[in-house]
Image (cartoon, rainbow, N blue to C red; front, side):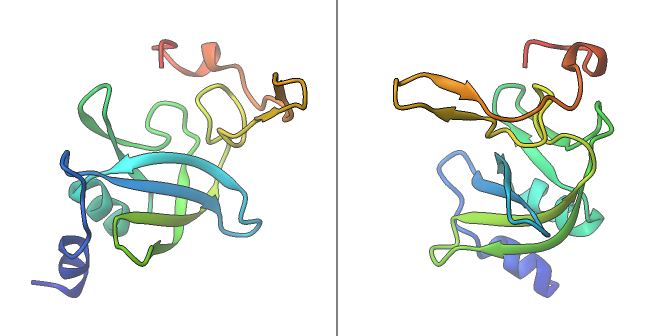
Length: 134
């Protein structure tokens, strides 16, 4: 068994076989998105150098950018001290968010308790995705 396979197996997956995956821009350290990976998604992310995730709603493996073309090129993979979460540094090509923003974290809570959009939309999701019920 390879060292990479040992590393993948050493992770502490939850009872659904998943890890939280925090995706950050390798250059700026901006948090782009949070998703979930199972062992296969982590393996494919490492093997291909492009992020793969497990969709809990669709119950299937998916690769970031498979529909939009907005890919994430992996620069480094880290794990936390408990080995139940990964942090993946990427070069983001296009928007990371399915709502058309660079980051999924484009809303900030105001003092009035409202969610204020604080980023510029990069693309129109209706023009990019077939299924806009994401």
